[in-house]
Length: 193
Image (cartoon, rainbow, N blue to C red; front, top):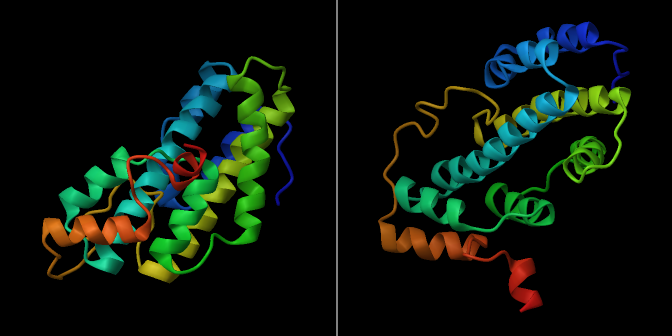
């Protein structure tokens, strides 16, 4: 894990060293960092993170398993996602777990996010650290998913990610998605019922 910058300018410099696709995906960050409290930047980045995680699973199902795109999108969007549930579904969709070092990086950022969202004190250095960790995570996940499936989820342009292929029909896709673990409730929630 990287050393954390001591100022907003250092965080912006770190952002500017990110690959082009990550910068495009989080393009509003430099302005948010400069203009607002750290919490705003952190909230924005976690919102974008959640979007990328869902897109990652959707794109993986469509590309690797030939799922019909509309049905796959519907089932991913209706599925209740937790942190643990994402890791389970990632393993199911991509056939390999999220790399341990990436899970550790994200957990460090999530600890700070949880403090901020629940009204607890999170220092400016902790919030800077969380932003840098999210950049590291995005870069690492782009690398891992690109190796496994040939696309990068933390980008603003996913056009053509599937290439030429014939998709399954909607009914078959529904069964496929259920087999991959997508339901209205997460498996974790279903066990608790």
